[in-house]
Image 1: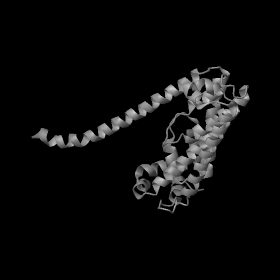
Image 2: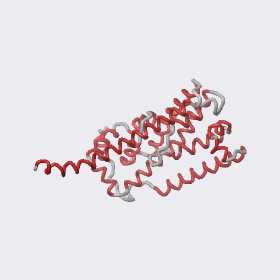
Image 3: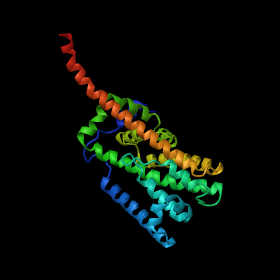
Length: 263
């Protein structure tokens, strides 16, 4: 049985056009998916007689009063757009769909299963889109050079020990998984296995959120709390990035000032 270093060695070097991935085919399919879900959502909203003004003026009340098909299609559409390059929060809308006020199916088990399955479909589409977006970036030689770094080699050895459970675990846990999606693309992990791990992980994650929200009848407290938490985490990540940039920019200045102080 090959060890992790052998598996790493088997990964071919990244080269422009030589990765065996058809970006054009995927992005065409993704564009059709988004267009189709948008059209389905608009058709369902129009069929129910809702006006877009109502959605803008009171989205919570309109969402609660809308039919289940409108909620599910809108839910899938939103999650299909939530990727690394459009980091929209996801947990809050799962909780919103699972509230008793939303009345998705009228039962605990059916609500949890439908919210988990629909959410997993949308998130899997978005995460696979991330895989292709990272692959597109890797076709630039400067970006592809990351595979020659010591950090990547260490990360790839760790990833090679169990790529499926790693992607699965990061899909379940409420932590940013951008690094794992990027690593899977750089490592050229099998796309079907990547999609399957994402689907199972998100199904479990969203199922837990939906169960807790519906079982304890948390109402709009759950989506509001999850949305506030997502905003705080995003603000924290932004602040950390700014601090790193300020620290990095101040180091050259300190180095230049060193000789002057000695004199």
